[in-house]
Image (cartoon, rainbow, N blue to C red; front, top):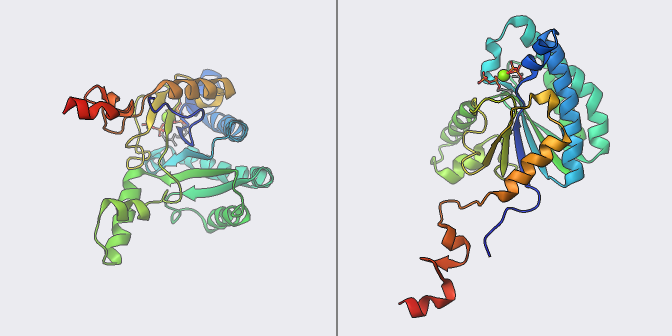
Length: 250
Ligand code: IPE
Ligand code: IPE
Ligand code: MG
């Protein structure tokens, strides 16, 4: 039997792109798109819970997003704090464990305290691990992991780096979705997405609903994940023959 993808991916990662365009199309300020993006994320978390997905990792603010106009950056910082205070209770009640992944140093002390409080409050939950990547970049993550190993005088091996990365508490993503039509990673999960199945949607993030998620999962299920092996190996065959016929082959 071929190793078919399970019914739902264990870990789904999402580049939530397209908020600005969603707003601009409606003659609204970009921040209105980001607010609608938070609503879309709340629905997405619920949909993941209902479908039995165990890990959701979302890209909320990249290392490079600081280069946006200052009013958009400060609007996004305020939205993070506001969304936290609005959503944490119900996430907690739904068994969601929150992790904030990224460099917290440039964030205000108040925001940092809010993030730590949300993590502490939800730390006993197990239904869904929800990683919010904020001021995150894949290159930052690889560099901070290497830095950590070097400061401890440890050898930089693949395994050691993997364990020092910001997402060491979860397995690598099975399915990586990007909304908004762009076909790039934009510095998201450079290390962890090595064998993720990629899915690109033209839908702008605020319009990415349950049906769109189901479509992504349906496509994921048609993928054959080979991890470097041949299709024959996955089918229990070597060079096109069943493994148990190998004696005859030789
Ligand atoms: C993604 O939406 C959210 C963030 C990067 C914070 P964008 O703001 O990039 O939306 P578009 O790509 O300009 O439409
Ligand atoms: C990626 O989207 C970052 C997030 C969704 C948070 P961007 O809109 O920043 O990516 P680019 O600039 O189009 O590559
Ligand atoms: Mg964008």
